[in-house]
Image (cartoon, rainbow, N blue to C red; front, side, top):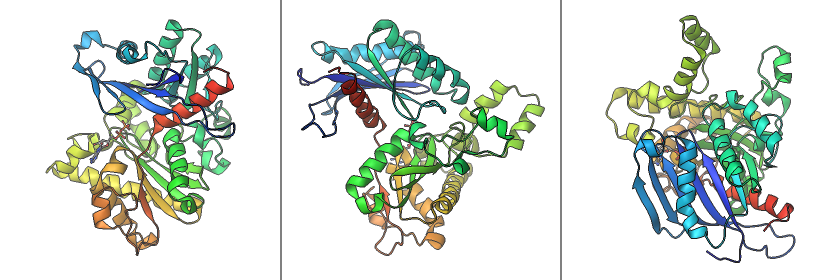
Length: 407
Ligand code: ADP
């Protein structure tokens, strides 16, 4: 790691994990050149409160930590964040970070771009906790922990909602009484950091496609689709919260709101319904086997197969819906854990799209997770592009650092 270049940290605090990445920020080649932060190390702790495991490695793959901890030592996100920072700080002693960028799930209608964090920003983000109960509190825990330990540290919040901020009114509305829209009860969309990265990447690898009508399928533990025109988001399958749209690992995706009413009328509390919709539904709830796609694909259980079939059916249906929004389809992109690594899931989704869109896959390219996996005969090109949400947070943080004259 070069001591001459400023260092920034990127923090991605999930529901049961904290990931911290270290980037160095080289000088831009000239005044108008964009900054290009370079990953130098990554640490993460998973299984917080259940079976904490810390792993940290340098960008060249050299492992600096791989250790399990008793739950009592890493009982919450605060402890996890301190531990990861401690491990990574060994290599940072001579060059401490000048800024920290956070992935923050919900920016509501207040934040359409990355923002420097102060007390007012923290208060606004706290008000959004009910709209992202699984993620927002943990994002804020990391922010507060840094503010306490280093009050002058430049902290930047980068939002999963921001990339979707320009959506047309029609894409934002839900047909509730209009007063609720004005109170912020509207469709925002999520996974925006991933989509922003994919939009940039597509403009590098296939600029002709990037200008067109593109649907990106971010299929990870969370899953959504984004419809883009000329690199800008025009609609997404996620809405007010990250529950909407596609079925996910443990989240339900779109369901009839009448089902929620029915659960409440049976006497379930709001908290119990929330736990079920966020944590016990989706692939896990349908299969009764696992939320993990790899486990389901390897399972012989009939309901594991049913869950995967439903997943592919719903993804294809929503692709059709977004193609209507775009008025056609010039490219389909798969990304995230499942999207970038699972040939059988991609082929099951694309099988549904053959008749309507003329999509066909090149079986060998799909099997190898190649970059272009559609066949020559396919009317719509299909690509696989791994995502890099942390890289986008690093870029926004580095830009803010320069704008603030730090580093
Ligand atoms: P997160 O949303 O937590 O960042 P990821 O993007 O890492 O999640 O995606 C996790 C999902 O990706 C899991 O369902 C996992 O099974 C799946 N996945 C990862 N690698 C593969 C693979 N080789 N084949 C099938 N699924 C995979």
